[in-house]
Image: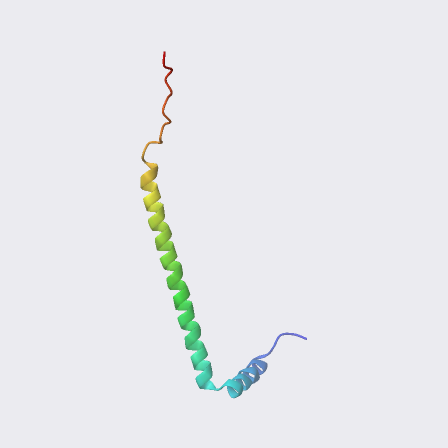
Amino acid sequence: MGGFSIWHWLIVLLVVVLLFGTKKLRNVGSDLGSAIRSFRKGLQEDEAADKKLDDASGQGAEQPAHKAPTETKGD
């Protein structure tokens, strides 16, 4: 009751190829690759946007804090 041997994996691969065909498997592979590329591009764009926001908020942090006006008592 151990793991699968190389022969088991070759038979599974042969059955998958026979069921789906090489053209369909190639299309699935290219679709998966383009989906991964799109995901990575989206992550990079999000990181760039976050960095841009951090830079913009960092400039505002250098300004002095707003002081509340002091009340004067009128006589």
